Amino acid sequence: MNPSEGLRVVVTGATGNVGTSLVRALAHEPRVASVLGLARRRPDLDLPRTEWEEVDLSLEGDEPRLGRLIEDADAVVHLAWRFQPTHDPAETWRANVLGSLRVFEAVAEARVPVLVHASSVGAYSPGPEGGAPVSEAWPTHGWPGAAYTREKAYLERVLDTFERDHPQTRVVRMRPAFLFKEESASEQRRIFAGRFFPGALMRPELLPLIPELKGLRFQALHTEDAADAYRRAVLRDVRGAFNLAADPVIDTETLASLLDARPVKVPTTAVRSVLAAAWKMRAVPASPDLFDAVLRLPILSTDRARSELEWEPSMTSTEALGAFLRGVRAGRGDDTAPLSGRRIG
Image 1 (tube, rainbow, N blue to C red):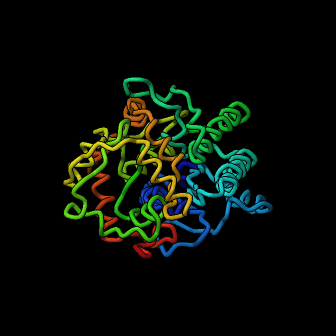
Image 2 (image 1 turned 120 degrees about the horizontal axis):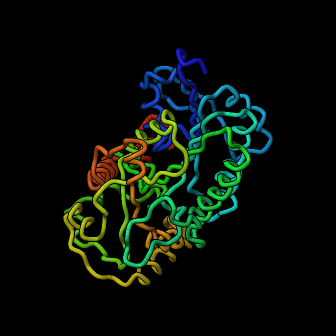
Image 3 (image 1 turned 90 degrees about the vertical axis):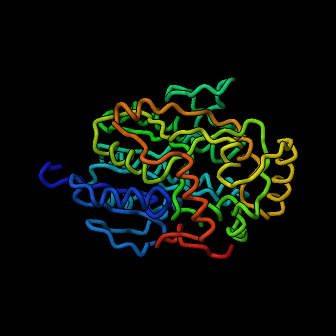
């Protein structure tokens, strides 16, 4: 790259929750000359210095075209991911794992200088007893029961080998907590609760009680803050993994406060049994195995991101979750196929 010309950045999964925020951030970044967003369906987004191409990473035989789209890139940010169908883990493996391998191979073939990969808190092994925050050195073996955590952990091992074999590429692994914004609410409702779940039910007057589950503690982050961290990872000479999360840690008491509801102790096994039955009947898309994984997620220390990226969340975790709840109630979305608003419910 000629420094006077600026960077050419390619973003896979550019129409999703993180992708839309990141593409917008890059499109207004002075050091970026152009952004190429790759997605399965072309969006109705008109952004400066941004072009779009339709690419399905799960398809075999399209590797030459993917290589051509990537070959002149200064950085590739790999965000593409499919959460469904949860009843067909082979399908998500083809899209998420094999699709990621195609991206990594194209990056290696083109000798792209920078690869930023969207890993996840879900890649981590269960957290330590007592719930102390973990650094990026915590094992990334995931929770073996859930397809999502298995796939994220597997790609961590793939990148271990990639870094060894391709030292010319600067590899960054972003491991964020749960990411929320108003515009992602309709998509996330469909992914986890199902397209027929009525978002209007997420109102304090309609949810007087909330189940209090042992072990339920997680972190959240506003998607715009995550996109800012990704932008910094593209521009700064950093390598390795970065945890991303905002304070405070969210537990049942925090959720009850947000929903103005009263916590009621419920056996975890009972909740899991209800979820398992609903999932088997295809009434909800979120699997009981994912529920098991969530209860075992570690709490993340974000010291490295704050130090080396000079990154700081602009919103708290409760503000991020509050934005999501507003979006669910209003059926908010964006002008992309994954994030389109409401769509029943």
